[in-house]
Amino acid sequence: MSYETLLVESKQDLLIVTLNRVDHKNSINDQLLQELNQMLDLAEQDPQCHAIVLQGKDGFFCTGMDFEQVTQQVLAGQTASFASDTYMNVLKRFSSSAKIIIAKVDGRVLAGGMGILAACDMVIASNQSQFGLSEAMWGLLPANVMPFLIRRVGFQPAYFMTLTMQNINAQRAYEIHLVDEVSENLDDSLRRLMLSLRRINNSTVLEAKKFFRKMWLINEEMEQCAIAELKHLMAQPEVINNIKNFALHQQFPWEKNA
Image (cartoon, rainbow, N blue to C red):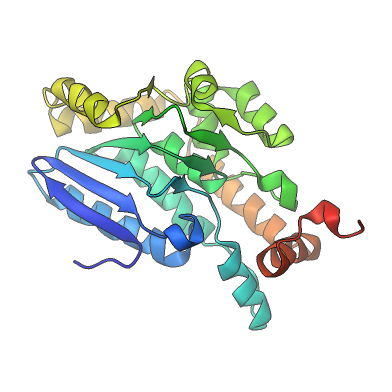
C-alpha cells in the first residue's frame, strides 16, 4: 500500500512508521488520520508484526491540528472542522491494539501530537525533544488529548501544561512519566526494549490493554464528551479567526491589537 503522509517499513517483526508531512511540521490533517487507520489495519492483520514504532522526521514528531487545512475550509465557505471523531478513534485504537506501539521521539511534540504520544504504550525520547500543549493560545482546549494524557501523567501536570502552554524538555517529560526513557541513542534504546517485549505474546498485550482500560476512566461517554467539546470550540468565530490569522499572516492572537 502506498501512503502520502507516512513512510512505512517492515523490519523483522517491527513496523517502522514515520510521519512524513515535514513541510507542514508533521501536523495532523484528514489524510494523515485515514492513513494511520489504514496502517493499523495492515499491522493487525500481519501475524509477523509484533510492534509498531512511530516516529517523526527532521525535528518534528507531530505538531497537532493542521491550521492550513482549517483555513482552506473557511476560505472555501465551508464550516471549519477537525476530524475529531477520527482522531479519537486513532488514539483509541493505539491504546487497544494487540500490537505494542512505541513512540520514538526526536524533536517537537505539540497539541494533538501529545495525544498520539500519550496513547502509545511506551515512549523513548532524545534529549533534544520538547513537549507542549498550545491549544489555549488559540481559544481551544486539548479536549481529545486529555483522557490519554491524564492517564499517563496525572491531572495536575496535564492541567498545568494546558493553562501555561509552556514547553517542557525531555528530562521534565521523564519526571512526569510522559516519557519512559530519555536516550542519546534511540536505536539502541529501542533494541534493548524489544529484547523484553519480544517475550510477550500479542494476545497477552491485548489482554493487558483491555484490563488496564477497565481500571481507568476512559470510556465511551468520556470520549464523546471530549469530541463534543472540541467541536463546540471549533465553531467559535474568534477561534476560527485566530487560526486563520496565524495560517495566513503568522499573527498570534495577542498581536491583533498591537
